[in-house]
Each structure stands twice: as C-alpha cells, then as structure tokens.
Amino acid sequence: MPLGAHLRFLFSGLLLALALAVAAPAGAQQVNPTANSVREQQFLEVLKGNPSAELRGRVSIPDTRAATLERPAGRDWRSFHQGTMTRIGAVAVLGMLVILVAFYLFRGRIRIEAGPSGQTITRFNAFERFMHWLTAGCFIILALSGLNVTFGKALLLPLIGPQAFTNLSVAAKWSHNFLAWPFMLGVALMFLVWIKDNIPNLGDLRWLAAGGGLIGKGHAPPARRFNGGQKVIFWAVVLGGAALSVSGIYLLYPSFSGGVLDMQFWNMVHGIVAVLMIAVMLAHIYIGSIGMEGAFDAMGSGEVDLNWAKEHHALWVAEEVEKGRAPGARLQPAE
Image 1 (cartoon, helix red, strand yellow):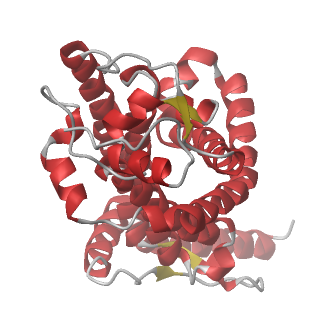
Image 2 (cartoon, rainbow, N blue to C red):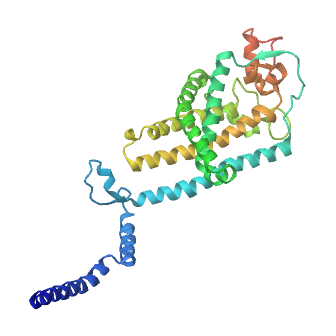
Image 3 (cartoon, rainbow, N blue to C red):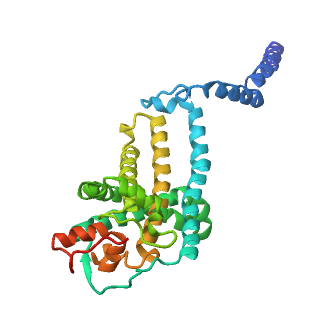
C-alpha cells in the first residue's frame, strides 16, 4: 500500500477516535439512570396533583392509548387494590365470623320458647323460594370467586400450586361473568315482590332497640311479615345488589365506563360493596340455619311452625288467621 494511503488511513482512525472521545461523556450524561430516575420521581410528584395527568410518549400505531408511559393514579389504585382493599375485606368478613362465633357461644341456638306446636303456616310460596335461592345460590358463587381475586394469591396459591390456582381462577372468572345476570334478575324480583312488606315503620325501630329478642330474655316486639332485622337484610341486598350490578356492568363492558380512571373507581366500588354484603349475608345465613330453631323451614319447605311464627311475627300471624290462611282461632300478638 502506498505511503499516502497509509497516512490517510491513520489520519481517519485518529479522527474517529477523537470523535468518540468527545461524544462519550455527553452520551453518558444523557443516559445517566440515577439522574433520570430522580427527574422521573420529581415529575410524577408534580403529576399527582392532577388525577387525570399522565406521562405520554409517541407511537406509530393507531391505538394512541399505547403512548401512555406512566399514570400516577394507577399507582394509587394498585396500592388500594393490593393493600387497603385486602384490609377492608379481612376486617369485614373475618370480623363478622368472629362476632357470630362469639354470639353462638354466648347465646346458643335460639329455640322455640313454647316448643313446636305440630301445626304449620305457609311462610313463603314456591315462587318466593325459587327467587330467594336463585339469588342466594348465585351470590355464594360470585362471593367465592370475588374473594379469590382479593385473597386467592396469598391464601390459595401457596396451598394448591400455580396450575391448580390458574384453573380455579379461570373457572371463577367465567362463573362470575355469567352468574352475574341471574343474580341481577333475582335482586330485581325480590324488590318487586317484597317491597310492599319491607317499608320501614316505627315498629321496626322498637324491634331493633329491643335487639329483636336475640339478646337477653323475652319476646321481641310483635312484627308483621318481615321484622326490623329482616328489613335491614332486604335493603342491604337491594341497594348493595344494585351497586354491584351497576359497577359490574361497567367492569364487564369497559367501553361504557368512560376511561381508565372510571374503571378504577367502579372496581373500588364493586370490591368494597361486595365484602360488606358478604359480611351481612354471613349473619343472615347464621340466623337462618344454626342460629335459630325453625328459621330454615321458611325457605326450605315454605312452612313454619305456628309457635315459631307467633313468637317472631305475631302481627303477621294474626293477619293470616283473619284471612283464613292459618290454623286455629284468632291469635293475640305475643307479649
């Protein structure tokens, strides 16, 4: 190779080395991860004042939502879902279980004071029982699948392993999506059929003030078809069921919810209302099963013992006797 060519090659190499040496410090300064991290945290702190603020980049695809790099509100929602929501659920559900166990140990099973009479009165007809069990059955499965979302990763996953937990969660998701509709139907039917018997009145306040006969000795104040406690359950189901239905529809169809922030809001509503309803239903299930003698028959066969009805719904029994739909002579409300 001629000498001139060697010199030109050497000179080009020196120029390239000099260019790299000059550019390297500037490049290193631009990609300093520590400095960028500090600036990012400062920027996110500024954005936190505006819940709808977000850090966006550029994309070349039609879906412009992909340009969102960071949304501080998303961190708040994740903190709520993985922390606050878990604590609310634990306090509501586990707290109610502790209360019910303590109540059973203290009070025991509530017996029919006069003993079974051997005569029965129709409490709920076949359609009412179908309506109740449709709603109750769907709610139990929905509640279990929802609790899996909140507690499953911490409680079930270590016990049954990743594959079984995945299969269970997928099945729970599909059951949740499909059983939501008959649950909504059941809540609507309960409202239409039982609203006339669940309008609050002063007698309900007296019933609640006396503890419904569940605490202490003696009868509860006389009640009609539904007493004060049952009216509380009714309105908890109707109002809570309505809130679950509206929020659940928005979660099933995100395009209707109005955006990511609205989805997060409805998710929080759905979760909080759900765990509160689960706590209320645990008390309802307790009273309707082991907590009170004769109570399950109301939704089992639909026929309850006459003495049980007189002790808990004396005014209603008197009305039924007046209409000729109950055995025996005209009955006086229990004192």
